[in-house]
Length: 310
Ligand code: HEM
Ligand SMILES: CC(C)=CCC/C(C)=C/CC/C(C)=C/COP(=O)(O)OP(=O)(O)O
Image (cartoon, rainbow, N blue to C red):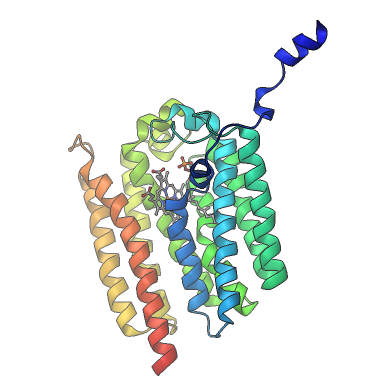
């Protein structure tokens, strides 16, 4: 009888679910991580070396797997808050398609594999940086900052900004001023990128009890901070030219994109409370994605041209 009771009370999370491969793919946050991996690739491609093509492919794959793994660990830990937010409720863990144990094991195994791959096939510096990035996002941001401070995104943004540094280190075994500038661009870009979304997903974060800036500091304060960060984004975007590792062409394009970024942020600041559909906020979020992709894509083409003709 006792045995039957024990079996009935057994923790069902230890059983394997009937998850499909697509559910595990979703744990990797593929859409967000595609841009993360692109920035890592650009960090690698602008480095003043010509790595063996196989090393470059393996390093990009390792960073992609590490980024995805950190997404799986984030979804494992955040299942409780994801369950109450409309944007995230259908994710594999809160919807029960993947058990928490499976998500945790998946995230841990992929993290170890990605770091070991860089350590064995690239170098220890890039492996340590990747391990630190995964740790920073999965532990420091997800388990601590996200639930405890409205500055969560500002500090946590360091994790999202590190991939180009990892990419650069994988092929050069160094960290110099160039990848630090790429880090700065993404680091300063993260608050306007995320707070624009937080303004139109405010209800979600309120329900989940997550202290995102709009819920804690209020609407007007968030809009002003978005505007200030957007000015810093525009300035950081031209630094590669100012510091001499990108051309005037890159400088002109990134300056134009930076002015557009400031313009969208200005509209968010000025439109405060006037538009119920929050169009300006949605436009700024969309433009933030285009901005980062475009700045890194132009830098990639620029460095390619400079390497050939420079
Ligand atoms: C701590 C830093 C960051 C936070 C908190 C954050 C937050 C978010 C959130 C909540 C979304 C909406 C995702 C969804 O719809 O499920 C999003 C979308 C997105 N983010 Fe970020 N983000 C951060 C950094 C980054 C970085 C560094 C990149 C790329 C370099 C990035 C790229 C994207 C992309 C591409 C999307 C659109 C995804 C889609 O279309 O579904 N984010 N971000
Ligand atoms: C190489 C490597 C390890 C890269 C990691 C890069 C990184 C930290 C990306 C963060 C992007 C992201 C999805 C943030 C979401 O925040 P959230 O978790 O609060 O959003 P959610 O509500 O959508 O889960």
